[in-house]
Image (cartoon, rainbow, N blue to C red; front, side):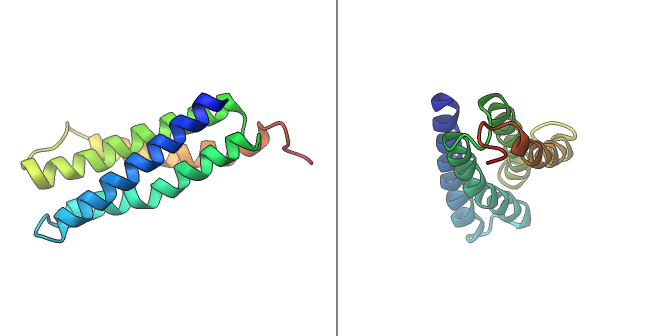
Length: 124
């Protein structure tokens, strides 16, 4: 459990750092795609930090927490990564990366909702 919580903290911090960096670059002509990538990273960074706290508080079980973490990290990498590649390199990460990433983020949110029923302290 401790390892998953720490990985969620790291993922949240990295997402936050990348979001700030992408925002800074976007403010100097990075375009709308880079702005959206930065926003998604910054919106999800606190969610990943909250996930770490929920796992540590045993409100989310470790296996469910690991699944949610993987889905959020993969979704952000695909969605924001694709938009950043388009903005900075002029080409996509790969065909359909952004829609796949967006769908994965939706699954992550749904998995987070479902994880409310997997923790030790779920009913009191």
